Image 1 (spheres, rainbow, N blue to C red):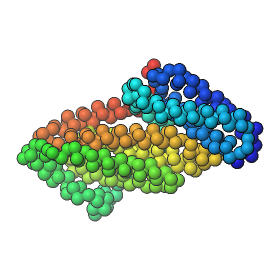
Image 2 (tube, rainbow, N blue to C red):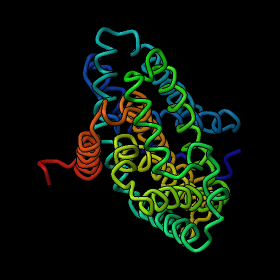
Image 3 (tube, rainbow, N blue to C red):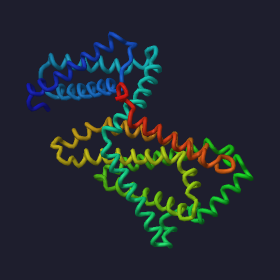
Length: 339
């Protein structure tokens, strides 16, 4: 129920006027392209106006205003559902997807860079802890690395892998696509879980990121101590330079969610805080999913091949190129004029 109808109308009229202007623009140019930001804004205006209509209908308020808002909601609904059937819809959709991928996601990433920095710091701390424990407590390997293929001495594993490559050069024949799909599914679940742990006020995010860091640090330390750093880099870098940052983006999203829940010095209601970050959360989730799809393809089709089939320097070089492109994408994507 609207307790103060005059104040409600005063607050909502700018929203209705903006939606009317957006509808006028879209209706006058039905084949024109819209940016991701414009589409998100239009959807927000539609939702808020529809919510306002529900409040007007529940209150015996201004009938003229109610009719006006009903017309706006009907027009917006028709625009949303008819636009998909117009010529060029798929072209506009692909253009919008590319705009989000090339600019929207990197801009969101930079806007929430403090949360990413926290994810990175926790993972590095976990790496240091895992390496330290492995060095100082020799019997801790079975606990730190609960994976059977990591229990062997690294040099023994490397010898086995290289011998298998000689005997069976295309070891993944007939399994690449299935394995890639399994990797994508598993890693995206882990990233989404990390993001969802923001609902625990960030405590679950801290735990998962630190734990992932412990495993990564222990693995690298184990291979370095056994003189197998080159193999470890060639094994991990092609997919890891994308997969690990993607998990960190999941943590970044988790901290953004946690920040909205906790509020810190933000006096707005929790509902408004969550509404303010929902687009950023959706963008981060989409970005990390895209990254993990690429990482899954690379891990299945390239990372599983070692010398003599694929020289280690080639794999390491590819990882360096990927990392450079990732940094350029996240650091420069969406900046106008290269600024």
